[in-house]
Image (cartoon, rainbow, N blue to C red; front, side):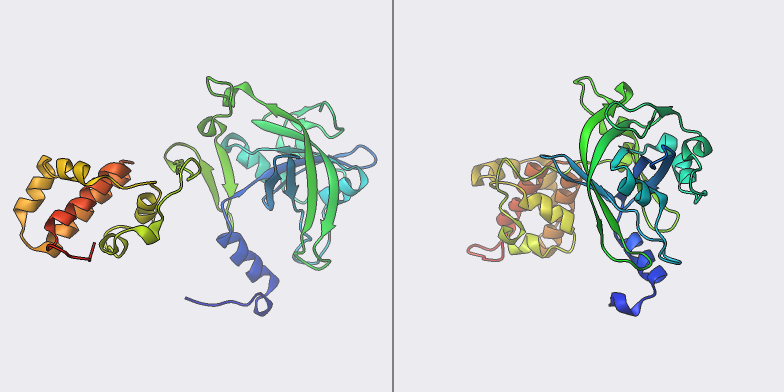
Length: 306
């Protein structure tokens, strides 16, 4: 492992390191206007949601790394504290990238990128018709984090109105994560697409309190077969199967085959761990626990190495 101090790196090298390490980052496609009503549209990946009540989004148009100059978006929100922030789907990622081009002040990126402007309801900047979600916002505060090259400028926005295309809603009228087909920003020219096999669910330990990885039997916790993710799944249960459940499960064909195949305790344990890993990868956590706990039947009487 290498160890880097930010002050020892050039600004481009530090920026590259941070942008590769911190991601995927959501993209805010921000529509703003200046005092003369001229429109600007630009994407920012230093962006996220920070509060639900009140609904707060923050994005950061950082100073340019080459000379520390500031961007039109920053000038606009200081002059007219309103912005429309759009979610960016895969269908519009190339146009969004094009809108990041440093055109001269006053050039309308809606036209350059080929986006369709739609009049907003509560704010003056127009919104992008092609975006799956558009959020009309009031800018509450702009906080400069520095004045040199690469310094961020936090634009703190309160959401006032949300527009959602029907095409990204499920049968219950809620946002469908797969249909949104969002893209995220990585380092360099890399992006990531949140759709299909790239999506997966991890149950939050909210309804119950998981026993934790530290409560796993040592033979499981120190397994060379089970990964950290596997241990996390096992630790996210409120209680383990009972002795009766394990004894009943031990009569299943595959468990009997494993016990019949070898009398070597270590080899048998490894086979059980491989079997449990299969169950975990299929989302069958309780079954994985039963598999692992049949190892008790293989342990010498009174063994503490469980």
